Image (cartoon, rainbow, N blue to C red; front, side, top):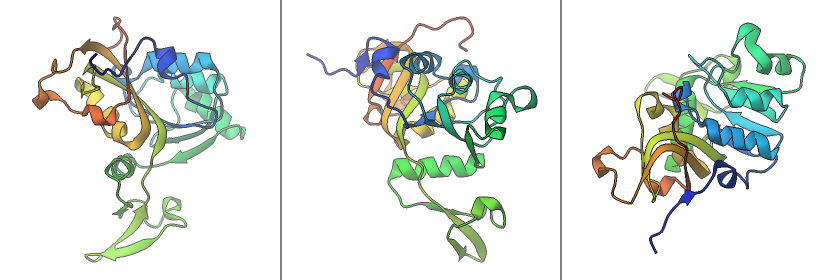
Length: 229
């Protein structure tokens, strides 16, 4: 029997996500958001989630904001945490003290995720020096530039979206999917990929694989709809 990482439904793929889990959620546009996985997560009723995502140039999403509206999110870590008119539901809950927010620059977020995936101890960057973003963090002068040490950012689960996968979890992306989905996949203990097309092992040209299957634990086929880019 051929080894396979395929799961029958989004619900079975996210069934072990627990209260208090830290989630990486890929996508910066609707085409990159794992909408089916997020819908399944909403249904199982987990709470007190920490969600790490990027809302830049996003209309608000079909999934993450629904989790917020259902009061399932305890903390948001994002370069752009507030979306929609007047900052939307996340801003309101943050203002009311129901939800914590950590703002992190996009480049710093990417490097912290990369450090987690690579297994290194952190990265030094000049970004944030002299601001509250650097409070309590180690600083060091490197080549005459003072830098802040940023720690790796690793999560319990990553929910990502890809255009194609094979049964071994190798992924190929399309368009905006290449952004956060690819950098988040190696940075979680368990990575779950929602994909538009699934093939047998070898169905994707190795030269076109962006995320190797070693970083992907579960694959769920969800047929694309008209608004899924």
